[in-house]
Length: 333
Image (cartoon, rainbow, N blue to C red):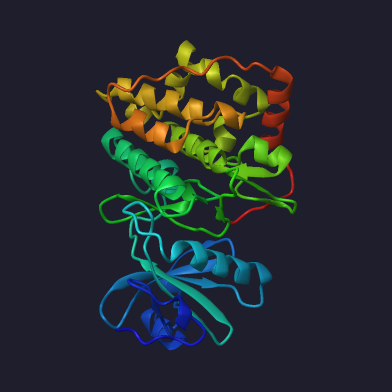
């Protein structure tokens, strides 16, 4: 049993432990450069091995940074008690000597972004569909099955890591919020999130909801299918305006990752494109819930309606231009 570190005794619970800084220093060989995996927002992430032999990921937040402190507290608050196959397991944390660190299960295959748009892994459709289904299950769990309704707030392929079996795990709860009774959260401060994956309505009105996560899921789904990031997929607001008609015109077929063109399950791929287009509708009220998405992904017989043309071209134009503009965004790197 790991000894409880100072300042976080109250956080201990089943499957969650407090660590001393010296333990994590030893686990990473003094945070050696060769152990560094990546940087994310306000922290560096290292691979490490605990005294027990357990391999872990350790996120070390930058010191003397107010954002780091708030992010650390938010991640512990929301992540510590989450238990789901498709949510990264937070094993414990450390808060001493001015240091703030989180300890996660090891996820050796890196982030989904590298696997899909990078050069590290060439994923076939079966692997991609398994990842899509896993992400949907994880988000549905956050929205409806974890005891409280949690909005992730920054869902995108950089925030989804892959374990040794290529199982997707949702991570980085820095911007997570508990839903208010009306299912929404109003932000008066600067925008929080990652450009390209942010709900247009949130960009314009500063109102975040579970349907904002659904939008981010839709853009992530398109990225998995096309192997293109939003800035490459959508050049301007006009591209977003044409999304609902792309499935009917088969235009999206030509945007599919060429590596998938020989796949036998093309009907399933096109179905996923339709789901992505539905999820990424500019108006939140036109999007499905994550349970609707999960049903459509899981059931071959599930009926899927193609999104209808926009009713208000003016309002939608404003929303689309907002999501593609250079608005002030607090964005993890």
